[in-house]
Length: 393
Image 1 (cartoon, one colour):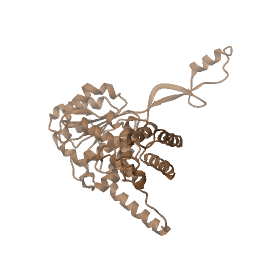
Image 2 (cartoon, helix red, strand yellow; image 1 turned 180 degrees about the vertical axis):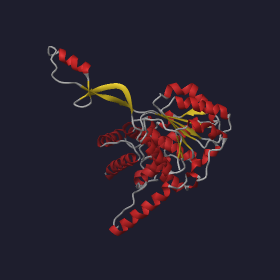
Image 3 (cartoon, helix red, strand yellow; image 1 turned 60 degrees about the horizontal axis):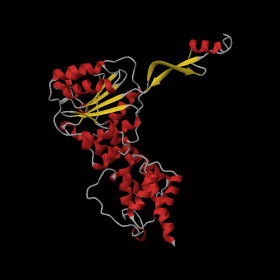
Image 4 (cartoon, one colour; image 1 turned 90 degrees about the vertical axis):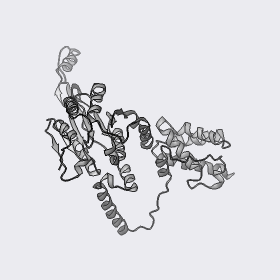
């Protein structure tokens, strides 16, 4: 019968869709999936799902994405012959898109054929694409359409944040370069009756520099919160030691949620965890909670602190100044990102920004992709000497 061959072909196509969605799937897993489905049969839909799930899913964070792709792939939302879809019982699709739905639909979207495109057409397409990307880089997050926001989110997933490692006081053995290691040289000489046959060398040891991000999610930052959370997810996946917090009227740690690989699942978990979305802003109280509860646990003296807020604080400015002073003394660099810096004539005249500004090392905008790229350049070129407050033009 041809049905078995078609089922095998669809399982291979399903594995390719999972691979496009970001799951790591090799040829051996595809062969195991074919064997597993052959063993359980296709009489019951749940048996097929469990067989494929046991083969393809390796992490808990991939479960929601697998479920969405399985539901869409075997219910006619993808190009599947009706006679094959009829082999498996149907179940209703949820009315609201759960986490992972957008990424699943993107993985099932067919690629556009490029046959018959001339070199001149490709050159024009490249020019138009570059022009559109250049406009998107400088467009304010608050003025973007839904399609432009989707393009920015996809771009943020590709960014890498080159935060240079810090040099420690410890050393590690070097092959033929570095400084002479007299202790190791003498220990080696004891094996040869005290005669030094070769000079041992040593190199400085480096460790990743920690990064702590405190992001404002109050009502005045609502237009930027969605894309800034995608930005936090991108840097959490691109750096080794990142701690993330959000604050409005209270401080909430979201590091564990942002470590989930699927960005839709991660932000859904953040939404269930955080309780003070789009409310007031009490930066001083949030910083006091961080300084007294989290500072010594997540921020060594070599760490970099990144505060993302417009500075429109409703709390006590003296408390904010006192907590900013303590935070500045406890970190290597204190960087403040303010979306209001997009205005040419902006001056930090609010009580909150005036209280915080003396303790900020770098004061930068955060309203478009170009400003985030500027932040990446700053992180890649941190100087050893602590500078004064820098306000970006």
